[in-house]
Length: 456
Ligand SMILES: C[S@@+](CC[C@H](N)C(=O)[O-])C[C@H]1O[C@@H](n2cnc3c(N)ncnc32)[C@H](O)[C@@H]1O
Image: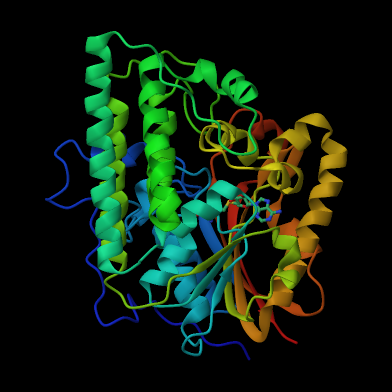
């Protein structure tokens, strides 16, 4: 029999953190993270706060708890701005309140020190919540940006290391602002551009050029060059600084948003990029300080294809909480291309291995559907293989328009093998937008959470 679910508890550590509703505390900068807008990032959560009809099925105890996990997103009782959640936008993030409940539901009977796995960890929401609840977590994602972001969001290194990251962030921001003022007085031309290893500088310049005003580009390149110097001695701290830079990159660019690649006029004051960068480092470190108040190991995060879990030499998972891509909905490789180019992140494996991206469905919908179902089957098979028999996996999946209406719970059930049974599920309706109304007809569009029990 699977373990009986019970009400989530806040923490396994000695002290549950007070969750701040925004990043840095009173000692942060005056125009701190609010200026860069956690509110905007909340819109990118996959779970909108709009109430919709909901329901559950299967196990009588677990089903209602799953419905509650979905509805928790609307209540926001584990705030989306707490801990390190708001430090970087990422499309289709899980709501932390949903993640927290699912982690507790699958892990509350876990043996001490045994890991939870999220094989599509994205920006690390599940890993942060597992870490906050005192569990060991393993994350996998094929997106090189996601993996770095998830590592940074759970980087609860000893206090002096976090302090160093904060100090270097302040120092770099101050120096770049100062250099910008000096350069303007001297009428200096643009600084030499960086050439990250493996990137042709001319091709990189062609791809990046139009997205930044010259003075913004000058500040960003100067920050990146200073981070390169830090990286020579301290790769971990440099990664924290890099993710702070990544977190503000689109804010100071002419790209409208992560999910909208259109060019917009955006006036960015001189010094603003450097100031936002400094604020973002503060925000990350403040979130890490809060996360570190619970004693637990740092998660391990691996850049790999979720279909190849068996080759990764991971310890067996005693629980899985994950949200695989929604068919035909996002295009992560496209959304992060400017970041990849600016930060010098190699992404060929991700371009080739991303599951169900929109670009596949736009190119050839029928072929993309076949490819999607095969890939989903491989990924679900791999995660079941990584789970210990007797344990639970909670998957959050969403109906989508992928050429035609795609019913995610049906796609998921179709690929299950005889090692698992569906124990319980819950759903909440989501609004149908534009062409979805026609494609879905009378049928509702839903977000689902499905719990699988590995029986053997
Ligand atoms: C719905 S998002 C997960 C979001 C995450 N739960 C969060 O809160 O940030 C799906 C993730 O699947 C990743 N992904 C797509 N194809 C993959 C593959 N073949 N292997 C591993 N990860 C993949 C994407 O990079 C994306 O981060």
